[in-house]
Length: 72
Image (cartoon, rainbow, N blue to C red; front, side, top):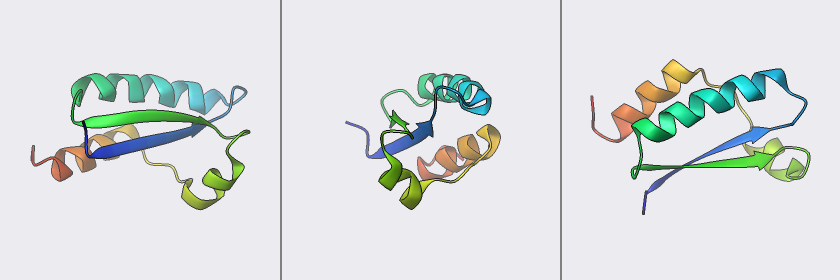
């Protein structure tokens, strides 16, 4: 079981969320078995969004995951 869990907050109406979902899908393949990717509907998890929401670009996220996992 992966020790790292990445949670994405999205809404169905958010255009950027759909684009981000594609990036996260690709990263989930790159880091299969090492990182667990979860999706949370921001409209249903408002308390979580208020506590954890923040945007990180796909490239920056991939670099950070590689560092944490010792791939760089």
